[in-house]
Length: 104
Image (cartoon, rainbow, N blue to C red; front, side, top):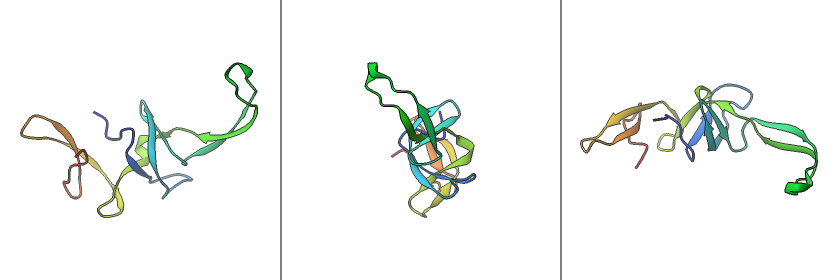
């Protein structure tokens, strides 16, 4: 079970985009793609087969998941994540600071 999943709100804690918030678009291994964070410019050739124009395209680059924290909307800060097993046997993520369950 991953600490950070697709659709989570995260905050960047280190690097050029420190302090930026965004939603996780996808998770690939230990790297995450966050919307409007770690933007890079790619020089692409036109590809008429998939109707793609050429030029300079700006898109998200992956960022390591250790450089982002799950955003806790209750206190407005980033929070570490722990795992807890409930009485019914489900394994859920909880915020370490408050003990509140992340997955409702």
